[in-house]
Image (cartoon, rainbow, N blue to C red):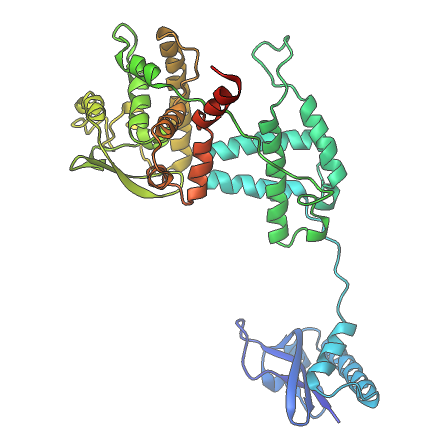
Length: 432
């Protein structure tokens, strides 16, 4: 027959109090049930009388004694019932049966969507992810505009709700400069981004146990499936790049020459991203090679410095010795006056402003060389990838140059620029 009694634990908890609960013994094997009640000292419990000795030392002492006595009686009744029915052979089964009978019914989850979303935005801001913070804040505001509910819970975000949200997004028009002219509808890519931030917030809530997986509206059959559409990636061809190198910009403000130089530097260093280019330092160049850490994923690497790149960089030698203005030993002048490069949010803000100016300059330069192509700073990466595909550079080599973690990423990226085999197939079927 199992024996059950009220006991105090021999070791104090982190607050210096001693847990008090129940010890169940059967055939010399004990187990314990503690429900969060404690005493300031083990000596305050009278094991023989099963009550608290000094009621002044324990708040609500009489109530706690009554509670423990009642629970002790219930435990003993449960043990007798189980053993009479011969369904129990171990003390843990008594403990489990007792706890199951007294398990509180969980209250429904009422965490609000905007509470989790606000925390996400604050984290993005704190981490300096300015672009993600601003773009996702705008997408969430549009989601709230549709929901028309400040206290939207996660169970409210159903499959039907999101399908109606998709229709809403397809009817939204971008706001142009002239508010009298209807703007263009949102692109499929933009609509997908709006759905992705909702999914991100929902996943965070599930991880934090603030939402149930059972209510999750994304995924398989009958739910909302999110697939990013392939975006068009068109780079400059060899002739356009040569024209870009040779066009005379001497009569234009310095930013035009800087825009051209920064674009070409990105192109010559395997499609370097513009943020990394603006952060280039003189110390990054050693023994004819460029060594730098990619800001997007932290990957390190090095590439050979082409002669054309050296001639571009030499144009900025005058900044190398100006320690007062160029506090950070940068090559290009657009971030030199920042107090620190460690404030990621302010850094990204300045980069975004600078890129906007550079892209406007590049648009005019492209008009000067007779091209209608978009030559934004990121197109330098596309141009390199397009040229590498034509030259049939091995994907493994490109993976290292791009700093991709997976070769599959490189192959998928390069496939966008692979046209020769398709063109050959068309010629074979239709003719030139």
